[in-house]
Length: 200
Image (tube, rainbow, N blue to C red):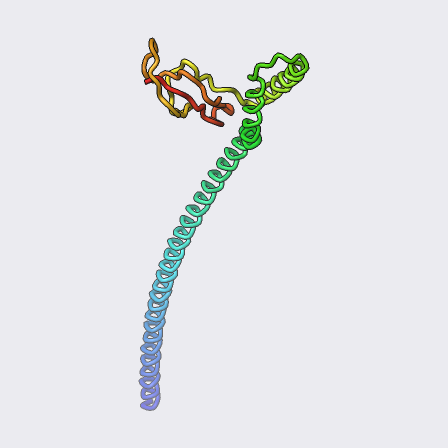
C-alpha cells in the first residue's frame, strides 16, 4: 500500500514536471513566434525602405531622361526650322551670284547704247543690241531683279552710295541729283547699291 502511494506521488511529480516542461515549451514557442513575427516585420520594413529608395531613384532617372528627350526634341525642331529657313532663302536668292556677275555686262551694254551715231549700219546693230538689252532686263525682272529708283529721291544709305555732293539751285539738301551707276534689288535684298551724286 505504501508502495502504491509512493508510486502515485512519483507519478504526480512526473506529471507536474511534464506539465511545467509543456508550459515552458509553449512559452518558448510563443516567444519564438513573437520573435519570428518581429523579425519578419523588421525584414518587411527594410524591404519597403529599399523599394521606396529604388522608386525614388527610378523617378529621378525618369525625370533626367524626360529632360534629355525634351531637350533633344527642341534641338531637332530648331535645326529643322533653321534648315527650312536656309532652304527657302537659297531658293529665294538662288540667282544672286549670277545676277551680280551679269550687272557689269548690263552696264557696258547700256553705255554702248548711249553712244549717238549717224551711220545707218551701226544704228541697225544698235537696234539688235537694244533687243538683247530688253531681253536681259526682262529675264532678270522675272527672277526678281529690278532697278532701284534713285533719281530725284531722298538719299537713303540702305539703297544709295553717295560718291559726291553738289549744290543745285532749287533742290533741297539730301536729294539724289544724278545716278552714276544704277543700283538693283533682288526681291527684298539689295543686290547692288546705286552710286549717286547728292545735293548739298
